[in-house]
Image 1: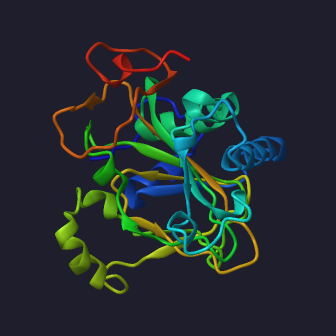
Image 2: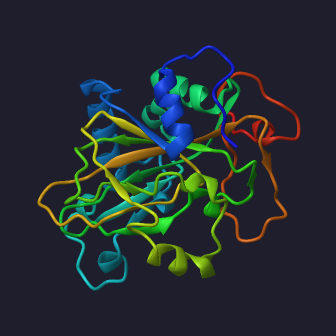
Length: 273
């Protein structure tokens, strides 16, 4: 169970930490500068284009119509759905993951200065083709990491609106534990009055932080504008990677971010970059 931080706050107010504890997410407006966002945007497009020789080609996933050949790829950048686990290969994205403005917020929310990066994802959400992402919990995917107490920082590269596919959250859902896939239709049928869902629009440069058990989704992009976002997922360095868990994502090594490292934990499995 999340509790109020015991250490001195580094970046957030007590009210912001209280909101995160209550709702499972909190937004920090205008956290990143225009220069920082421009660096992310240009690097995202370079990698999505397939022209970044330093990044593995397998990191790029196209939107479904392009991936399955139903629609011809005329512009790979505008056909890309997402890119994943790029931090170990790219210095610009690694600098973002280590940005003290973001990591200080993570430290406040985890109440810990020993922090390891689980992984990262660039979401491109191109105009008209950007697909929706169904309701889910990150820890249902990161199911080999214990405790299930990670925090994701979702940075808006472009303005994220309801029409172009911003995130939606279910406040308080981080207290539900992991919802089995078979139970999700029942839960989702009660969205509305029983379980309110709220949009989380963001200005470019703002960052939303959510718990790994928070139920969230994003809509399709039905506009002429892009909706790029960059998510970095953090955990305490004392977390455990249970390699006996079946069907867990294959993440080859984690990334040390801040503080101490500990034997027989995720921080003992970091890549040296």
